[in-house]
Length: 257
Image (cartoon, helix red, strand yellow):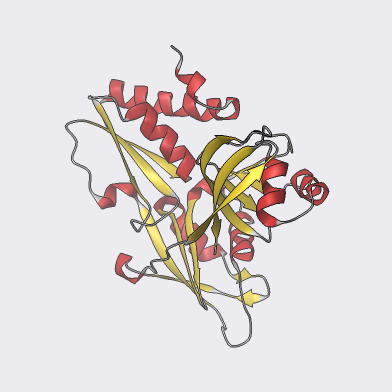
């Protein structure tokens, strides 16, 4: 039985990476540290490595509630510590009285430095306080070169783990009846936006499923999929509870407050 059959075709490339990491640890008998993985990638990596008795996997992103985490894949004899995950923590100092900076601006400014998204962990925005988590190997470069976000001049100050803000995302669950499990159909129902407008947003790369941009309105959604609609927040398919007599799907979706 192929391991690939348990996952979507677009996830096969990442599965190959995980298998390569596992093989590297097995043959070199030394730990392998990855870049930051999103929750879906963490789930896939755990599924592939978690059943192996000789190779283990652990995740860390700064806080227990961190969404994006680095994975450490290691031989069973190895005792890992937090320092093995090599992350750096920063507070963003900016003129709070005069400007407001938001998550998309922060991510855009970080990406403009020429680094890939997986070099950054969570971006925490709570009231006026902004913190970012980065891979240690890029920390000095980011600190030296991130000088503005939007119209705001900024400075990055190193902080300790104890200073990180713990943010918990709350979702309200609601039942829906949908004609199909297509992405455009579900988003239209959950956010009460016309299907035509949803399709346009998908075509303009404003929709993500499991942290990956999806360009096909006909994309088939499944249980545990995390959906993101730009400007409307996030939602998660909690359960699919079968079909009605009229052949429609009954689903429960958790929607970000």
